[in-house]
Image 1 (cartoon, rainbow, N blue to C red):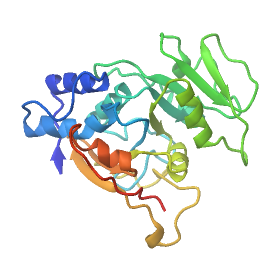
Image 2: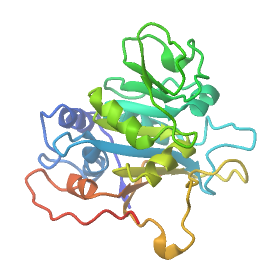
Image 3: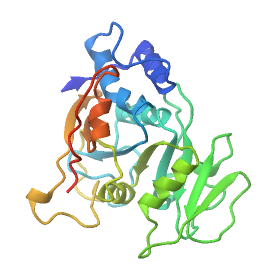
Length: 277
């Protein structure tokens, strides 16, 4: 397991990588800083094309909330800071409407240096009120993806999609967001939204952050719409483990682009085939 130490100087380097002004391979770093570059560098890089990463925080027993829906303190303080760093490295953050309604999400980078990403809410039926915190006008781009013709407040960009079998297609969502210039996406929640992007084979990476607590009940982290009946058909991603302090992150790669991103910029790599079945 790699122990991550996000010092101010290594975070400054990571932000420079995001801007295309630096690489993740050069410089003199201690082990913790090098682990930080290994963890965040693949998400910060913009030289390998579009990236979509899912992130989910859960307990040791695989829960993302209690039976009453309390999810605010599932991640420890280091896990929460990690999530804010991930936001700072992407062009846009995607959540489902249930997450927006229940968690009063703001999707900002309050816990680290960096720019706020575009905020994207998947709201097929137009349930999200215009005064929701995630739609607050703070100069950041805001999108609502919906099937209804419900109008939105001034400044909120609406992407209308036709539902398929009662659901909005993750592939169409990804394509429309990239048409808007959002090439690096974080699928943050909830578990159903992440699982639908994962099953559609749209995730480059998936990060599962585990906090040391046992909840005993409540919703599970990931439940696939069409789960494997046999272990031989289960997804088997490339995996690395990082200790953040209060939480442990399992960083899973699913595509050749994920493997390529873990190599220095000047290295060559023959990527493996995707691990989707």
